[in-house]
Image (tube, rainbow, N blue to C red; front, side, top):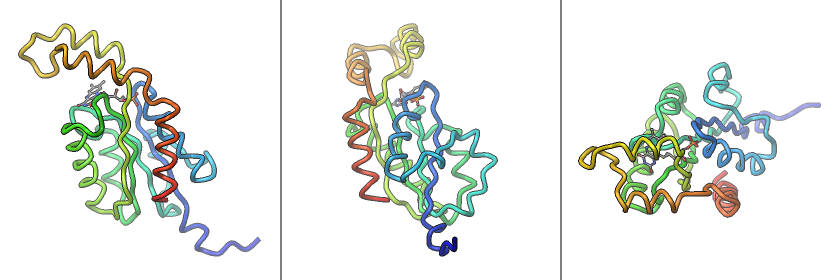
Amino acid sequence: MYLPNIYHMEKTIIIYSSLTGNTKKAAESICEIIGNNKNFFSVQEAENIDLTQYEKVILGFWVDKGNMDSKIRKCLKGIKGKKVGFIGTLGAEPQSAHGKKVYEKAQLLCSKENEFLGGYLCLGEVAPKLIEMMKKFPLKLIHPYTEERKARIEKANGHPNNEDFENIKKYFKDIL
Ligand SMILES: Cc1cc2nc3c(=O)[nH]c(=O)nc-3n(C[C@H](O)[C@H](O)[C@H](O)COP(=O)(O)O)c2cc1C
């Protein structure tokens, strides 16, 4: 069957990086919007994929020290001339000052060599291992386990949840 070029031009790929599974789940929820899950790859798998057939790239990242994680940043360096969007998960509230900075940084990086489609940040629970590490930090170090941090971390427990997945789907339905 003959397929016009436009069919190929509209293809979307999702590439995600996830340490503890939050970002994988969040990014996976977008598969429904793009109509299949064959274009869903971990950042490691994506190393061997030819991106020329895709017009749009959705990058899934977890926030590491206020930025997109390094694996996704490395992957993004190889993406040029595409329409790029992102789904990011983080321990802090997306609407907080920290969340807003993360969004701006990610937007800037996505816009450098590509057209920015839009991005969505979602709460992602913090791995128990990391919490144990924070508890051992002396109070003056970065990320000490203060009462405020404890409250913030507890807020992220259970996320991303079904409501998050619905919101993510709604967002990407609009921009894709
Ligand atoms: C080493 C490390 C650094 C992190 N740094 C931040 C940060 O700067 N800001 C934040 O809001 N969350 C931070 N987090 C929390 C994660 O971004 C969050 O739990 C995310 O959902 C993890 O996603 P994943 O399960 O896909 O790996 C950090 C987590 C780890 C393990």
